[in-house]
Image 1: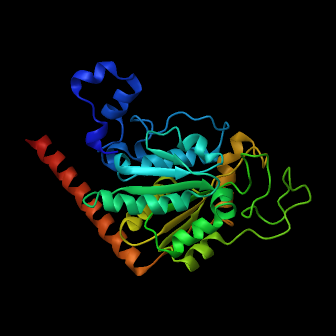
Image 2: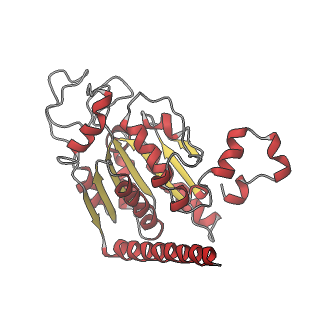
Image 3: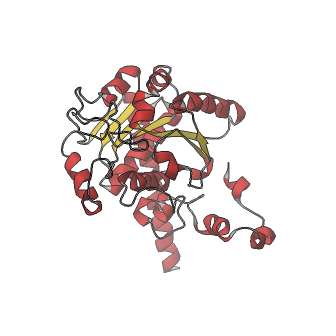
Length: 303
């Protein structure tokens, strides 16, 4: 997809679905983060507005935030697999590929290579978004090998610490002792050290967090994508609670996310020297561009 590809001729707009026309006219395509970023959610036509996920689902909130944070949504493809997350990801106005049972990182490996050959003059972002089961259990080998090979795309793990989509089985990412529908005696081994494994496998930018701060979470998403474009694999391990399987009242979901952010999901950011150089350059360029736009507005107002 591209901005030119999705923009219809003016004379054909009246024949197109209203939602599509509004997305082109008032959506985030081709706009800056100040115009259509996380800080302005609700003030522009968003890429994901409806989904069939549970009421109060923290994962659905974070997925919405991911799409609002994309640097270039018109040149982005997402890949997912079986799990709760794909119910929302597939509803977004960004091309989505459904992988079979954990093979999303293998598919992303081929897709990123194909994009670089087919569109050498363009930047195409590929992002895998899957749960803890799809990323670290069923898809473990394909996730690890994509990192070991140094594939340049971003992996986002939606960790609800359970197989929420299939009845409540414990996963490798469930904490030790967790009592779940299909783990009535409590899980008897520790949570897998996902970020340590990512570091050992060669990821160049890694973050573990509970996304309760919109600006901080958006910055992490954008950093991961920018670094993956140039350096190597990036990984975001985000806490996205399952309020159903862990019996968290809807009104307490945010408080739970804050509490976990003080514990096993306390913010932790790792980057290689190469990744740091990219981040400093890109964020410096964005800051300069914001200043230039602000100065232009002031000059226009004065004149």
